[in-house]
Image 1 (cartoon, helix red, strand yellow):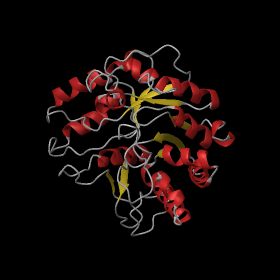
Image 2: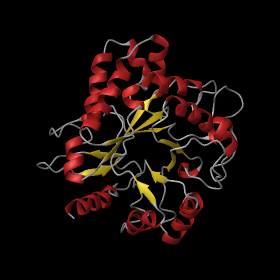
Image 3: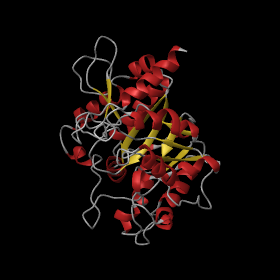
Image 4: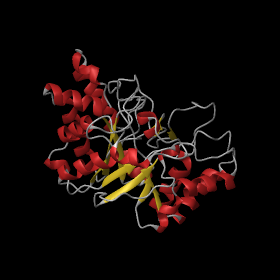
Length: 338
């Protein structure tokens, strides 16, 4: 991701090069980037990668008729696709995308007309005619923060669909329909709302675009260090999708709860048992850019030989060791060796 303010600085080209390196970095010792496409494929047997892209940068380019950031993202996608990877593009306005603040001083929390501008400016025929490119409509919407409607436990799903009623073209379903009109062939992903951006009490609305799926971000999947309490929370947030015929999977997560789950028993159960039993998928490797911002899904900090030691985001942010990624790493390795 790249802040829109960079386009008014002399370092724009350098910043774009850094962002592209962060998104496609090779396994060079000493780089604090996220490993490499090759390491991901050959060491993990992975087949998908997720990039968050900046609405702020794309919207700025749209307004000023610039193309550098959009071109960089397209080049990165082309490299990943050429390497055989499915690519998820997630539109981002959160902490690290530097999208301008709303009138209330908060960052944008629901998609709006500017989101549509950003998608339209980024997408070209190479992307919209490639079914290996998946589009995540808007990263982590919040009706509570955007509209002061609903609560973390009981989101306002009408506001999620069509917005707060104060701005035109706002809301996940409204913008999702627009995105489908300009990208008729790509799978669309819709993030949930509330705790973990889940789907508590959610009913799939009428008019949901075809070829769509749903995604949540379980950043707090360990509940009070108790397995039974954790399972109860998962069931409320997203477990019943299994019985309704809609695809659901994780596109963002971390494991900063070793203090709550010291033996990783809940982590192991969540990844290896609960998610498969409920037909819920999980993206195990993805990242944001540039490298110096945190917010990565999975990060690599060292390169012993040609084997990257993958860890999860924001190391020690909670005062606990983040090592849930090792569970997924072993899973990928085991699958790759079969």
